[in-house]
Image (cartoon, rainbow, N blue to C red; front, side, top):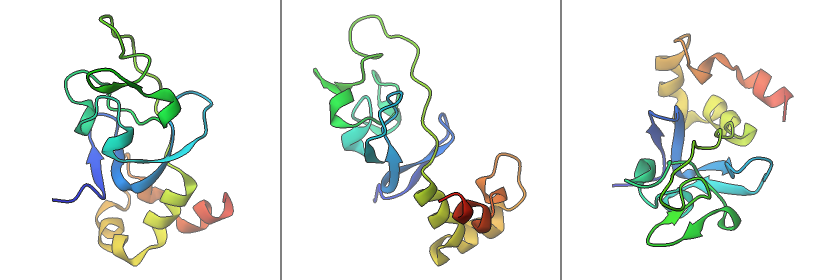
Length: 125
């Protein structure tokens, strides 16, 4: 089994070590990927204790599991707002041949990022 690319239904976004991303801590901007090493909770979708968001090393704290500041301690707080997908990732999904079947299946469905054409993504790079 590979964790290169998957999908998190709760946060409605792609996850995995093959997904370039930005730290979910507000205004951080650190480039990471959405792998298990960066997920709050240390397990897919955050496990039992984490929120399932992805953070750089500066914003994850190691106790018995790695947690963000909102999930550390006995009293968990509301999670941060997740950062949007990077333009690099969106451009890859909209142009790479490996995503052609997905684009064909998803095109025009509500909530689909396939509505964002490669030309639009490229023009905002």
